[in-house]
Amino acid sequence: MENVVLEVKNLSKSFAHDGGQIHVLTNLNLKIYKDDFTVVMGSSGSGKSTLLYAISGMDKATSGSVIYNGKDINTLKEKEITKLRHTDFGFVFQQMHLVSNLTLFENVCISGYLNKDKKASDINEYATELFKRMDIDEVKNHLPSQVSGGQMQRCAIARAIINKPAIVFADEPTGALNKKNSIEVLDILSDLNNNGQSIVMVTHDIRAAIRADRIIYLSDGNVLGDLRLHKYKKEDEKSRENQINAWLNSLEW
Ligand SMILES: Nc1ncnc2c1ncn2[C@@H]1O[C@H](COP(=O)(O)OP(=O)(O)O)[C@@H](O)[C@H]1O
Ligand SMILES: [Mg+2]
Image (cartoon, rainbow, N blue to C red):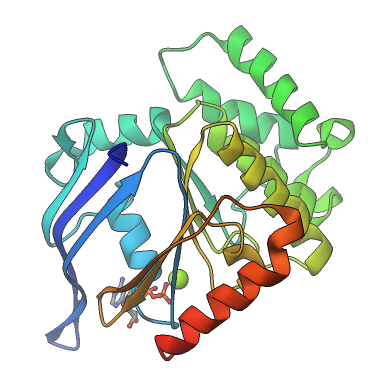
């Protein structure tokens, strides 16, 4: 199974705090595989968000490397990282961070226009296709405040994939959603993954975790557990949930 899209080597991340240092990640090693829907779990404060930001170029690690496409993104210049964020990586957050005075459609297209390699007309066309695929076509000219949380998050996913990124990173994308909206959003993510999209998603929600092909468990700034699962199927939900819960219990989650 050597189809590595991202390789994390000896990654450490510390923050200055109260005159000292907090060591959040310590010499962490991890390979992310292209076909996987990878989920990152761990207790609150275990460093999940820090890891996600450090491996996606959102934040610089203190030391170590993150190899993407043969390059260490931890050593790239700010300008090169920015370009990477606009072309190769997509992001979805718990609080969707949509621009409140732009329509849903504009929110998605603006992200596309940041990629200077593409024509605006192509972006608009692809955005139209995505709005249909995400089933938010009928609200595309609404402002974020005029739609449901689930519709906002589906719009945020469309924004994340408008540039056809190699990897979509999601930090607790269902954390602010009710059950129905969470399922809608997870269905979209599963669907994307079934169509070849690499996904790395942080969550502490079992309902979200059952979508994973693989779950990484973080503890004390390192990988404590690494669970491989079969591809998600709706009919297996209960048995997956039991399997994951048993595994999490064994890790004293
Ligand atoms: N910018 C920062 N400055 C100082 N400490 C931080 C910063 N970001 C995160 N931390 C600390 O790092 C630890 C891990 O945080 P985080 O990655 O957000 O955890 P998680 O997402 O698993 O809940 C926490 O103890 C948090 O307080
Ligand atoms: Mg977090």
